[in-house]
Image (cartoon, rainbow, N blue to C red; front, side, top):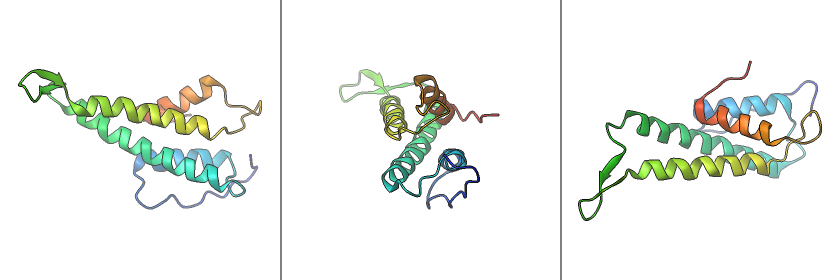
Length: 124
């Protein structure tokens, strides 16, 4: 952790959700000595952006079912992809293993970060 963090510019291509996560975690943690964690953070931010895009598609769909190859109703592909990207986001955030006040992020902390990324919740 750092007392006066210098937040590096977000990687090119990050959208709102990804940039928010990038800034929020860089405001608390210093990744200068951990390039592997910085790579994981970038991937988590990009994944959060994909989750946001997939959620928008699902939210605007008239029906969550589409016709399968035999004409049968099946879940639209974005629903399954959304589930998989959310799981990936959780895995990436856990892989960061960032120290908290007690030197370990709890499952609650990780869940809160994942929920913020998924639902666009900004912490106070």
